[in-house]
Length: 213
Image (cartoon, rainbow, N blue to C red):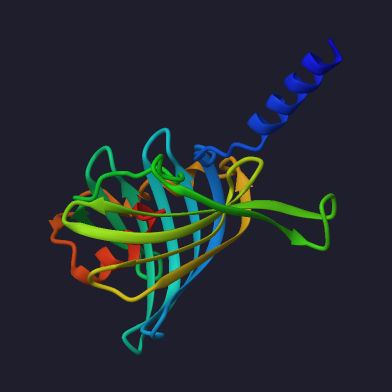
């Protein structure tokens, strides 16, 4: 009997060590810092993320190809529309959003690479898991490494590259589960009557990393 109990305990212990890909909370707000390997792009942004309604708000400032930019947009994936906002002069442009919504998650075919504690020790730090893999988005092959919290699957860091770009690293911080201000995901009144325009390639690059997590 003791041998059976010991065997059961060992099996349970082994199963507890198996790690499975996870999905981040469906509602989140936070900030991130994005930087490319060759320094062609650096971005600081606040984001509001709604996986239920498939909506994202990005409020960014940064440098792209040695030019400073500001980018404030509401991405409505179900409607296939992006609103780009300018609160200084209360103007709004509207463009087709032809990118599919990809929830913040670790892909099911990702490989578990290890576990570590961010901080001094277990109990005084944050336990995180590292995942890596390769996936295809349309005609684009993507290699990635993602780090998320062991509890909650909150994003910590994501690094990826494609055939068209060098390595891009994104560090997440001030992550809060839930959305305190849902109005951030609703186009303001001055967007009423905005005409559809074509989204340019630079704007596509600025939002693409959300599809690569």
